[in-house]
Length: 120
Image (tube, rainbow, N blue to C red):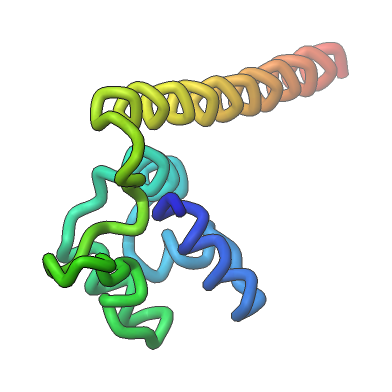
């Protein structure tokens, strides 16, 4: 399971949003979302997130079945590391595209409103 999915599940259980978590952590929504999607979030941020969500940091990890310690939940043993990396990058790009499209719509709306205001 990917880190973003784990966090989304925990937020849903608490009836909270990712934007709320980002604000509580002092992060931007886009920065937190990208970090979770890419799996590139810092351990200190994971600890802060765990404190905010009132859970142990270990909730973000799972025990390996052969007692080799822990492995992150966002990695899959049967998949090649390069494939996982490429898959994460693709998901990050999709998230970025959606964010940029949203920003473009907002800017078009602002331009439209400014045009109307100029006419008045």
